[in-house]
Image (cartoon, rainbow, N blue to C red; front, side):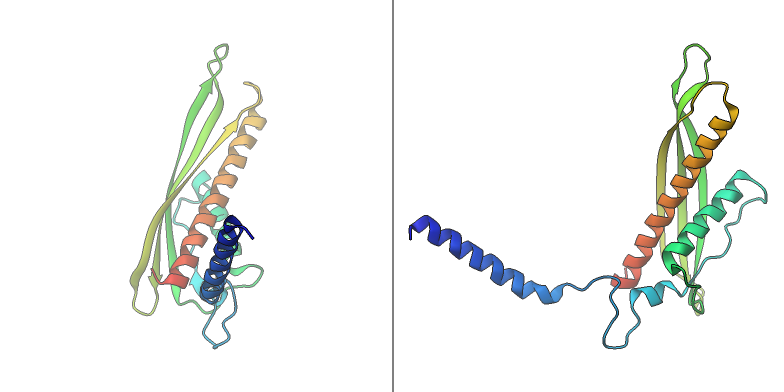
Length: 183
């Protein structure tokens, strides 16, 4: 065997030894605990999601319901929540901006829709905030034809739904991180 082959073999043995030593440190985030402590899924089930405070029958009220429903599905799955220990208060603002404007009609042909959300996880027993955070989502959408009102309206609604899903995903990930790491 040449010296180069011995070095390669030594590196492979060192890498395998290091991997074996750290293998016990890895624990899947959603794994059930053998020692009886509640797993992440059980902790997420204890988060209550009150309705978002927006004026009834407004576009933001529909969006608040969309975010809340997406978040409830991500936290609870097909189950319903357990007796609540926490309450997640959500506030958000929306924005639209035109990216491209048609030179012939002076109407926008592409826009960006944005949601900026603030959330606060409150422990119900003490009524204290245990975690706060902010997140955002920006999605772009094209509006086909300058005179197709339904298509333009539908494109905006689809963009709202995609942004709501993204906000719910980000909040769920942050909640999971809080319950696993405690920070």
